[in-house]
Structure formats: C-alpha cells, structure tokens
Image 1 (tube, rainbow, N blue to C red):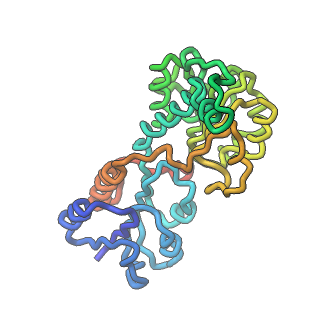
Image 2: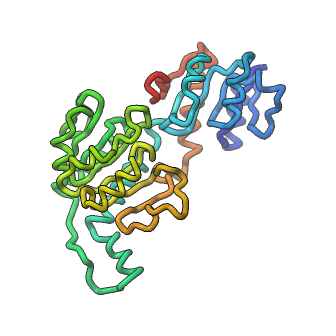
Image 3: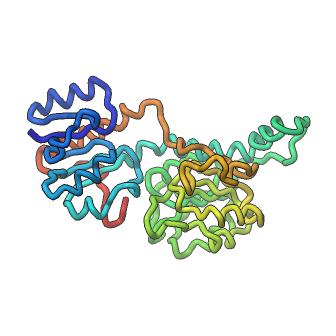
Length: 316
C-alpha cells in the first residue's frame, strides 16, 4: 500500500479527510515510520531529515514532496530532480503577513517608535533625537516581484510610496509603479529610501546585497531582509551601516541562522532583528493543508500537480 509521510502536523479532521478519501493509501507521521516503510513512501507532506535517507535508497518510490514554505533552498534539489520527484511549495500564503511585517519595520522608524524604544531603555528624555516623517512620497525598492513583492507593493502604494520592483528582465508586475532588471538597478539604488529583499535563495542571489551594491546607495536607505539570510553579506552590511551607506537594517533572516547570542549584530541599535517570524500566521495549518490536498488529489489522479510546483532547475 502506498504511503504518505506526514512530516507536517495536521488537524485530526484533516487527517480523517485524507484517510476517508484515499482508503488505498497509508498516512504515517515520522515517529510511526519504520525502516521497512521507507520504500513504500511515495509522498511527503512537509520536510523531514528522512528525506535524504529515502532518496539515497536505490529502491525508493518517492514521487511528490509538498513543503510548507515558499523557499526551497534547504532541500536537496539536485537529488530530487535526479529522482524525478515533483516538489510544491506554499508560495503566496505568507504574502500578507510578510508585507505587513515590512510595513511595521518601516513605520517603526519613520514614526519614531524605534527611537522611542531606545530612549525608553536609556536616557528617557521627553524628546527624541530625530524628526519623525511619513512613508508618503518615499521610494521603496523591492527585489522580487512575486506574490510577496506584489502584496507589499500594493500596501506601500496605498500609503503613498513610489514602488520600484527588481526582477530578472525588468518585466512589468502588478502594483509596481516601475520595474527594472537586475542588471539596471543603479539609478533605483541611488534614489531608494527603503530596500527590501524578497528573493528566493539561489546561486545568483547569494550575497547579492554586497559591498558593491551598498556603495551605490545615496539616500542612506533602510535595508529590510525577509527573503533568505545568505542573500545579504553580513560583514558588508555592518560596514555599510558604519559608513552610513545604510541608515538601518531590519533582518527577519540572517547569516548565520539562528544568529548566535554573541554575534555583533545583536549589539547594534541600528539593526532590528526578528527570529524568522515575518510570515507567521495563527491559522497556518488551515491555510497550508488545502494546497497539499489539492495537489495530492491531482497527483493520485495522474501524477501531476495543480499549483505551486517548483522549478527544480531554477530553485523556486
């Protein structure tokens, strides 16, 4: 009997739905899976260290992996591709949460809340060492024009920001006032007040945010990273802050991650760190499961997927 490894926790009613709809399949969580089961596993819902073990077996039957994240850089993509496994992500479900997190970071700075918190912890003066401003009229440069970038662009535009997107070719994208190609960002970097990384991690985007990029800024922008930590060269980031090429950084992801407690980034008042939570939502399992359920139904029917299939060559 074919098996689904349920690495992602599900609600009882969700598991019951699967068992009732697919009586010819077995559904086991990782704790219940035995070595004898490995070659029966055709589908994995969520990620688990057993994935590499299963792929290494020449007799494995794995055909479909549904992960619960947008990024898939942590998966053994080459091994999955070599084995002919189809992979789906959950791109899009985090868009509202992440875009709101970015807005919160920007607003906390321009409206003085970050400065107020520092003052409250320190001098407690009845004044702030800054003049507050608004987001209206400021330029937001977003690297990545996918669903997260588009959600952020729509919200930022509603607040009166001018939003420029960066993608591979400079092709238009919904909710952006302008788009530019990766190879033509100099002018946008020179005029940006805020820079957001919303890109997947690939060999091309690794350390994209580097000394060379930071040297092109002119407005002392704030950098916000909600993509992947290794997209930003941490040493170059701290140098750019020291040299006032950047005014501040808000990092939801870091390199390394988790960030060690003795890392110098923790000590900086010009860096705001959140522990990879910008995409968290309270109803996560209820949001993720329909994606898997729809893909699994199609997979059982003909081996294909209906949504969110990852291009294993591109890595997203």
